[in-house]
Length: 190
Image (cartoon, rainbow, N blue to C red; front, top):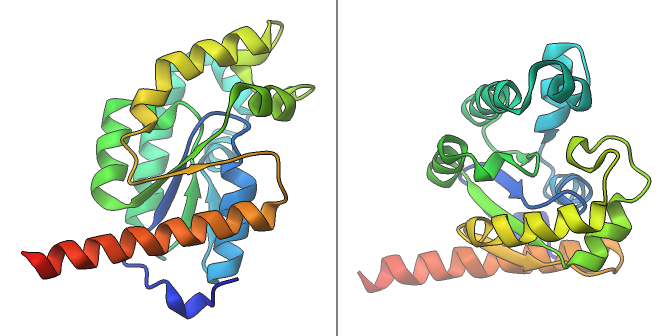
């Protein structure tokens, strides 16, 4: 595994992708490895609202949830400590204002997973508003179709598979280092 000193971060890392892709588990492992804070934006929303994401969706609707989500992510990015890992909900990056903000102010990492892995990881969980009382495979397939082109706008894409967390973490660390090297090379050639 890479040493913490090999990756010099100048802005927060924001994890994006569909539910079940590993944003929270990989984000938490990445933050621990780098010795920086980890924050799950959905947990922050629940903390300030006093109710679960599922309850916010059912009581106030998705539009109100997205409004609150944007404000929370903006606060997380703009307040110290500035170097941290933020895991976002699956719809955050799809929202134009949130996407513009995180692309401008952070290093975005899309954890891309295939349908089978997403279904496996999201089955039997009751914390996913879009998957409650429905055919999760069908919904996830539709979300892949609708959202993967937008997620591809992230700075870095890491393909996730059904492997142990350390292997995926190493892929993420290598991708960050490669991205930083590419940026450095681009600056040198200008």
